[in-house]
Length: 164
Image (cartoon, rainbow, N blue to C red; front, side, top):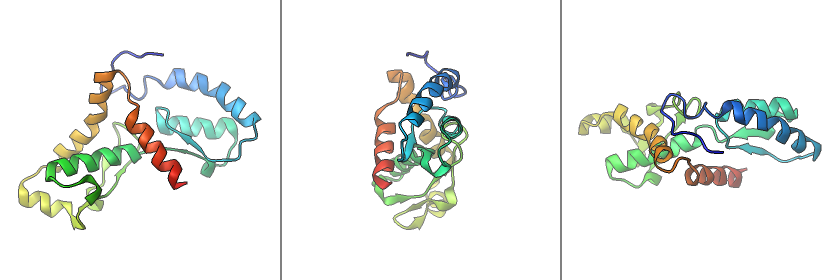
């Protein structure tokens, strides 16, 4: 199934109607197997699809989870690392909200090498809003270039399932 190139306003929700229709069949089949594990959802719009899976399968909420803002957080860490010339693994912090346009970086949680980012950015004249925009737009760059995203979400899902 191919989708036209998307803009920032509709990229994750353009798939909602199609994915929701497919979900009914998949959820019924999954429920019939008496699946007893943790279902990790990567489909967009992620939070909406997670909620639908929870309702359609009747599985407990703790057994149906999405990747949420894990990918957004990774993109933020990469953007911070690039901006401050540090390894992204030296960046701690979180993006919160719903995956996609409405997610945001909780700058009060972000540290570089255990130092709060806000005073460091102010000292260097770095605009944190610019970093947030870069981090949010990186997914759209990939989407508009390839027509889909795959590697980053797969890596995020792998990380999440290994943690479970």
